[in-house]
Length: 299
Image (cartoon, rainbow, N blue to C red):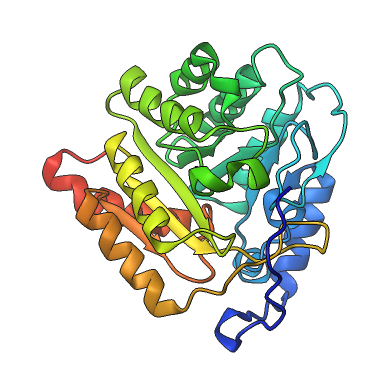
């Protein structure tokens, strides 16, 4: 991992309180009862208090142990357990009990499985649809090591939004996503459109890892080039001292400039801000995209 300078002082605009109210406690009880994981907790998201307090969460399937070690991510890297065949039904039950209208599902990378866990992803989407026929479903998947057959399995379950995060600029992949690949991630997003042309696609980018604004602009151009419909941009916040240090804190005005550049490149819907995360306010972002695309047929 390359050495990056440590920015020690967190600006006031990058600080976020996250009080947990009674509703958040009840949600945690439900998740524990169902034996479910959330990326909100595992990734130490700064928005956890806000989301849990209003009764939303992003389900993380296929366990809480990842086969990859990314420099920014606090999800544990360890030998995973076998997929739990009962997990899709429990996710669906929890989503129904939470009364969700929009269900976001993410998961750890499972390079130990022949299909990367794709069948389990599809089963989870199908189970949620059965329990909540009117709800929309967004999936935030790993790259499945570029296996198009695995991607096709997930897309066959017809998620409303397919999300795969690019995360950072090509130059920083060795430090940040050593087991991934920039071109591979772009191809996953391109393949999603090729395999299911009506599919709404989404990708996210973190800033503050050592990239330049010109590099961010180039990534946004590449995402537009593979047909990405929705882009999210947020500030990287170092989860522990074991992770890649913060190189810079990007001020709110710069996030507005990123959004303008993304739209100029042709990305229809952009959510850009200090605390933006790929799944944060996902329902509202999807609704914005649907409203904007209704003239062209919607999604």
